[in-house]
Image 1 (cartoon, rainbow, N blue to C red):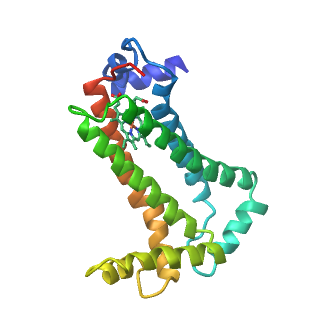
Image 2: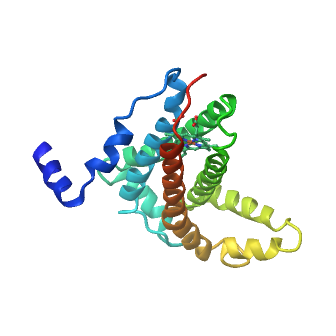
Length: 215
Ligand code: HEM
């Protein structure tokens, strides 16, 4: 394993740029509360891997989505486990993110010069909630259909642009096959890519600005 990594490192130079970051000395005064961001990131990785596995069997079509979920749950080897991991890692991600946000707030790490990282964190939170909302429709059962109908109709109450926004989110006037495809695209492509970019910015700023202990 070590030799294989050495061989890769020789080609890509992965070790040197990360060595200083991963092996740096941490400041005094850090506690387990400072692991909450890392716990959120671990949940995000599990979410990503389990989602990638689910996408091998899930079919985003009006006529087949529900059946494909039943197949994952009942026929696919360990499908029920992967689906459960996806659901639970999503729940844990939200719990860890909110706790992490509370730690940052209590230790006043949202203040300058880290204000932009706080804003990036807030945007990540919005992306996570949007991922939860779009993912909820994918089982394509009665509960998800009506939850999406109610949720998207709220957009229409926004003055002036509301109805256009609802039309854009649904991909038409009503929740239907077009909405399912749109939500699937947001759920597996647009939102994860945006989140990956936001997390990259988040970690880059932590690397540049460092963490100050004291909670
Ligand atoms: C998927 C979501 C997130 C991940 C994976 C993540 C990850 C991390 C990690 C690993 C750190 C290093 C220190 C620590 O763990 O406490 C950190 C710091 C920080 N995070 Fe997050 N974070 C997320 C969401 C958020 C949110 C929602 C906010 C605020 C709205 C936020 C604001 C900050 C700030 C301001 C810092 C710097 C704190 C300091 O220097 O003490 N993060 N984040």
